[in-house]
Length: 255
Image (cartoon, rainbow, N blue to C red; front, side, top):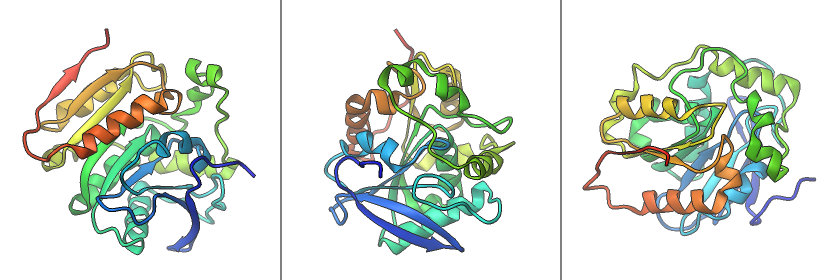
């Protein structure tokens, strides 16, 4: 069994016929909880080094169907269905409003959740992600990511069917027409300066579509949220703790 950092509470939630493994760090803590949506094929254990460092609030995530501790789905699913599923789980956990963070594939799903359920999302953090997925397979290049190879992280942990369904769920997906609707939600976009999977220009496109969005290009390549977990957790925490008023747009280029 893979050891998960920080000893989160683990449960199985059954939604729309899908049993999904859910992990919660600091369950029941005061304040707005943070939901983290991971990259394609990545499980709770892969996210743990980052999520265990985000203190002062409940942080929770889940394994997608066919990933980690969640069994394969019987049928393919789409992004709107999975968005509805994660909001249903949030409601079951007692969270009417959440902060939302997503990495890579999970960043695309986070955009879908935010535009589909804007009343449930207080703040949004998008990392190493894109406003459009042209074809299945985004995320596979992470297997050859320089930071990943140096760190020894092992991805993905999904079944072949799990990976196929995750790829299909986002194939041809785009949020471009919907992102301007998010102008009332504070948005932080973090992109890796050496990301060869989703280059920083994808983050610029997202920032241009959301009024007031903050774009920052940070050290690292595609897996910077995990290989630079301490710095990433600190930046996320700082953003989530900000007072909602007084937002400003800040686009920082890599040095």
